[in-house]
Amino acid sequence: MVTRTILLLAALFGAGAVAAQAYKWTDENGVVHFSDRPEPGAEEIVLPEANVSRRQRPRPNLRAAADAEEPEPDQGPFAYQSFEVANPGPEETLWNIEGTLNVSLDLQPALQPGHQIRVYFDGEPRLVSGTSFQIEEVWRGVHNIQAEVLDETGQLMIRSRTNRFYVQQNSILQ
Image (cartoon, rainbow, N blue to C red; front, side):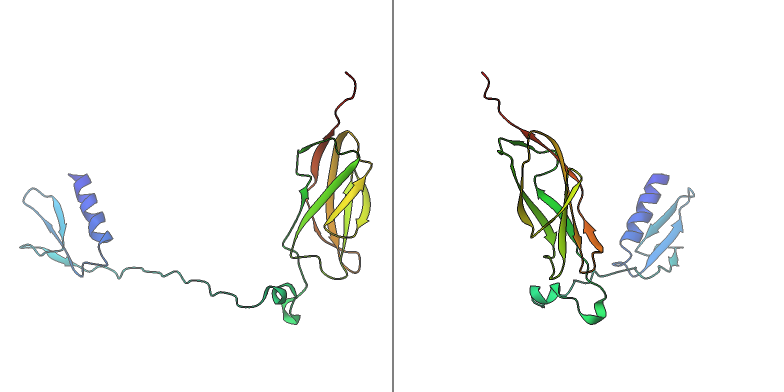
């Protein structure tokens, strides 16, 4: 009986936005009832207004992509959003690359004028000229690669995670 009363009360409050009035009364057995229709001896319950919120849709940004990449004077310093080594992937095994590793980096937004990319291949730093390049003399074994972007003054702006990858070479021995 208590469960029924709780369910009835929950339904009543759930429909509070629809029902303008609610009533409460107790029957001859002492059971409390709630309803949207008045019964003899029922008292009116004043329900609070429904708490309604509406989600606002974001307005589309009509600025061109080129404008979005250039910081406006009042926006503060430029910042990159993401940077990762796309190729070779983490824990990837490369076969028979003949000593030449093709590397590609994913930088968002694109590399800004005056900024440089420094790559650490097996802990050795080297500057590269873009987000796609080759590293020579990469032989069989376990290797690590990480990249970072430096601004005009040499300050670190963003750094990728380190990708560990493996190079395998087929043996010519039979």
